[in-house]
Structures are given as C-alpha cells and as structure tokens.
Amino acid sequence: MIELTRLNGHKIVVNLDLIKFIEATPDTLLTLSTGDKLMVQESVEEVLERVIVFRRSIQFPLVRPLEIEGLQGCDTMG
Image (cartoon, rainbow, N blue to C red; front, side, top):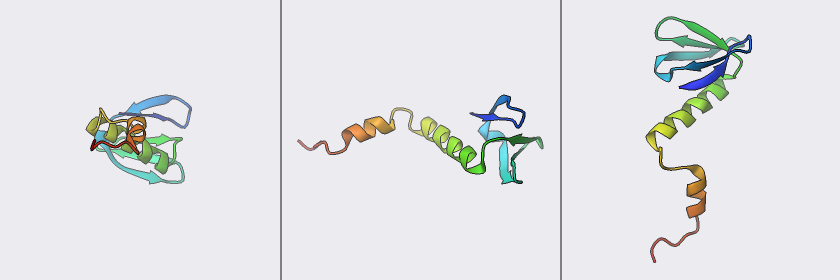
C-alpha cells in the first residue's frame, strides 16, 4: 500500500493490487479494478516510484540500500 494525496490535500492509502492503470490528464488519475477513480497530486512518475519502492520492500525485506552500499568494496572471499 502507498500513501498518496488527493487534490483537496487529504492523504489516502491505496491498495496497489487494485490499481488497474494510471493516467496523466494532466492531473494524475488512478483507475481501480473496482471502477473507482482517484485524482491525486503526485505525478505518474512519483506514483510509479512509490509502487516500485513498496514492491521491493516486500520482495527483499532484509536488503536495504545502505547495507548494500556498506558491502561495496568488501572482500568477501577471504
């Protein structure tokens, strides 16, 4: 789930599994599989970035970017 902002400034949390498609009209319009439509302040790119970050956190919950950076240059072979 990701937090987005309606055009009126109210925060909402959206279930990603319900998003059917996202359009720039020029406001960002999310169409859900339920048929509901949501207009949000965030750009299409911002919504996609939040989706990617959330999906990565679910698929790789124990790997964090800072941990990966800390391993760069380490000799793990000995």
